[in-house]
Length: 149
Length: 132
Image (cartoon, chains in turn orange, yellow):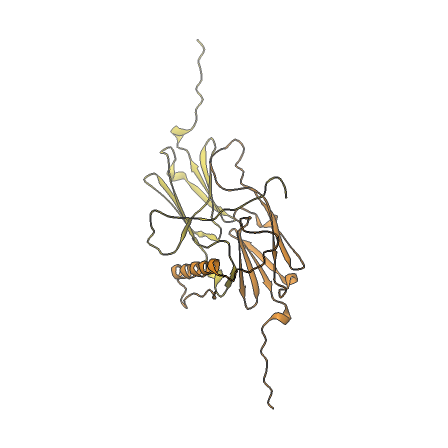
């Protein structure tokens, strides 16, 4: 697996292609030894986890979920996201097609002990929830000086 | 958990008519329902901003397209993945009872909502029975 990098001059088409390729590689990678904890695949919301130098980034697809109805909790190494998705039509309407599920959800992720969940920050826009969890100070990369003998 | 727990299914990739742009495109999940005056369409397009949506009606075919925002992904390394990211596209054939000029759209929390007003002649009318 590698870092997702876009060309120096941002080109949306190329950027999307390289992102899709990196995610494909991650699907196929034997490095999937990520400990999900209590819930597995197929549970709403679909979840991707990324890492960078600062820590980890959890991204979930939550279309149709109002940000104020989301609850994000942390306990020890466990991050729990719960909420409710309503897709019911107004009264008196009849469905032609109903593909969007509704109901309550709750999903827990077990995160690495290196991360500081007390400093986690979450944003939710355009139906995408992003939770950024920084590394603990002692887990951050550090330059070690060489002393002259 | 309560009575109904939400599950998710794999995103469906758009196949068939191939696009000129490279990369994968997904078919958004939609709800379509009807009220007395309009047909309503709601499509799940997480990660798509308002200005990246294109809605067209041509020859009775409604097409919705959304370009996903990918800038936020730069310099991240995937460690665990359940879904891929891609643009959204879907087409519907409209009955000629829709007044295409009055279609309205809005985007909220990653869901596109379209109101497709019925043409006057297609609205239900109550027919009075005259007493003899």
